[in-house]
Image 1 (cartoon, helix red, strand yellow):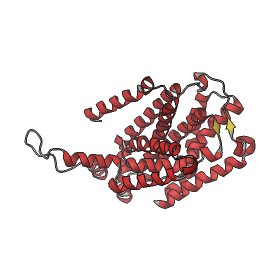
Image 2 (image 1 turned 30 degrees about the vertical axis):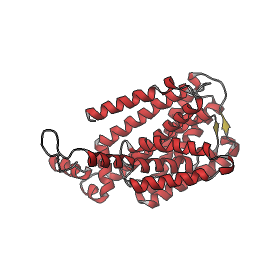
Image 3 (image 1 turned 90 degrees about the vertical axis):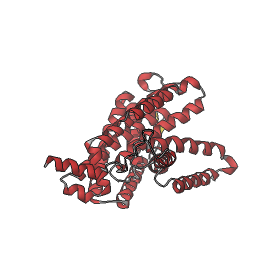
Length: 347
């Protein structure tokens, strides 16, 4: 990571950590908690996007995580912190069920397979009454304490989910700049060419799917403890936890490091504000305005907000540097080009 980017990152982290210091409004903190949950889920979703894989089934992993921690805590008296770790494991194991369509299907066909997978799990949660309580759902006990991830105010929740979001972002950055990340991005450009260079792309995509699912399961488990009530319609909700993370990633910049973060920060409070403002007799108008906002952003910035801001920066910066030298016109090395260079160097 460049020094300038590192300074910006540390500044943003410090600013995020000071939010509860400047406001004690519980509603604002609730919105901030939801933003961080969506940051984490969208960042996890975006790990697959590094390889050009579009998933519409992350609600499955979110729901698996929610139900894992709830069932272990309520019915087996397992500590919620251990429940979050178990949720990551069960979500990762659940993702292996998608291994076959991941390796055999491409593009929209895999996206439809993930969508069907999430819907199947929602129906299972409804009918598996002895385990999940069906449509009634599971309610976590009101007993409070840090060990039980239950508090009377939202400040502790905020700091916990902030730490989780930072860990997810750190994992995403590590993957993006690692050998795995370069191979995934090269595969997104030309999978057959990357395979010809000897890279086992199916194994890479499977690893990305497992990591993405595990992170999503962790945030699903946290959301279960934060929202207290776990039910199939909410925790396996396709619009909330499959479509929304995809929209956040696409609006912010799919396949980039910062795109999912920016998308979640922009779209989550917008949706919440529209929902609370246009309720009652004007209910439904919020979806119209939200849709119009999406269309405008996509039309103005087709590559996402991050890509659009970079283009604006390049457009308005001075064409020549202060030392009189022209900027490098060769552009960044593409992942597949770097991969080919590294393979050639080895041979």
